[in-house]
Amino acid sequence: MAFDPNRPFNDLPDLPPASETETRAVLRSPILFILEAVRSTAEWTTAKIRAIRELLDETGAAHRQRMPRIYSRELAELIFVYPYYRIGDVVRAGIARRQTATVDLKALAAEGLMEEVRAGRENLYISLPFLEHLAERE
Image (cartoon, rainbow, N blue to C red):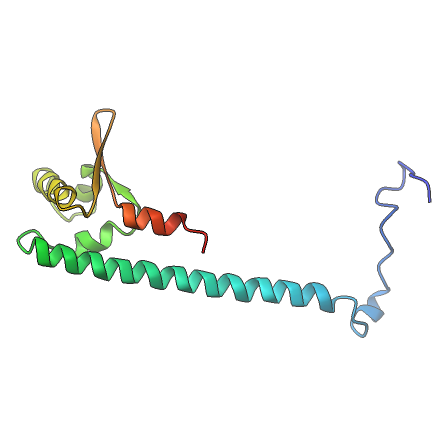
């Protein structure tokens, strides 16, 4: 069959009549493919969430053990919402005032739980283990 610009998609086979799509196995393969994709994506996402929750618990325990004076569950959970924070983010979350947030984030960086990086006029505090988890494909 030659190409006809007035008839787009003319190389594609015609779909079976609507009455046959329910009885024939025409749609079975695509439906099974989609269901398998949904299943595998759900399993991958569940495993990723579990791994992040475990990392949150480990980081919270390390934070509590190494720095019991400044430990707060809210701060530990906040640093697992996004992989990096500015001091203002902690203040906006209502966890601490600016001076306390500065001291707390610097202490987390000094203990190796976060990394402090200069970005313009501000410092970013990056949770490298969390960022690595997010970047993993498996």
